[in-house]
Image (tube, rainbow, N blue to C red; front, top):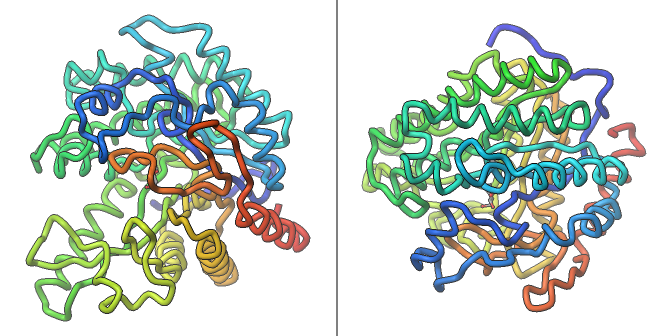
Length: 408
Ligand code: IFM
């Protein structure tokens, strides 16, 4: 990517935010995941149901998020709400999303709108989802409606969240709908997502020329399990296929580089398609240990990912970073270590322009159900009561310290 892109002066110079996604927090959705949940494909047979009850509580949630001192908020629009039947748009749902965006702004938060965050309308999924030749074009019809509805209220778009995570979990590992195990389709769907992104990029720029448009790429640092040449080559190959291929294919059609960073994985030729999330407590070199999902806590990896991303010549947004743990003191250590890693990268000259903690609220973690707790704000799923965790106040303090040094 040859063209150097600068961060526009009319945006906040640094976006401090939190993030969520529609199906994980809203509740009451009917999409391909609902069918998956009804078919008992989630751990403990859980169903997203009312999720975090956010659809009914959006405005009071925004007041809570604003208490964190953030100036941005990343959320997603649920395609299945907006276009419940092919070609039929729900005007009320659209205007509710517009109202939500206005409320974010009223609370001093720059809205960062994700258009596709894993879920599909049932009518689209039933016909093959993004694999159908016309899939990207159908996605664009929905994108147009959203972007026209939002007008100048939204100037920051993520077209597609973690295309490779979606492709691999849905078409290779089969743990997400449509539950397939097919390498060729995994690659094909990732190509369709690239096409969908490119179309959406042009479309958004036509409707809102000042908007910034990109994707949220999940970066997983692959390290060789051992020093054997086979593991070393495999780690490099996975790094290219999972972390770099989409970025390179999209090329100049991204105004910023969105990075979701959580962990690293260990590549072993013994299981070439299933890198191990850790080498276990003993084999791990991580000082902070593992998250409760078994992910290696490796903040140095964020610095490494940012330094590598500098070569793409774009401003960088850390569109997600966070931890699932019942131990809030560990969340604080995780947050500190990753913010420190980000600051080190900035000091080395990386143009980072935002950090979004995943997640604002506890929420429905896909096939893992409700057990993982990623939130700065705890949700009691029986009463839907919200309680700020200590880590929420800690994040606020870190934001204040950075803002005092001009990062805002
Ligand atoms: O909850 C997910 C999110 O939907 C996408 N990025 C990773 C998060 C944690 O697994």
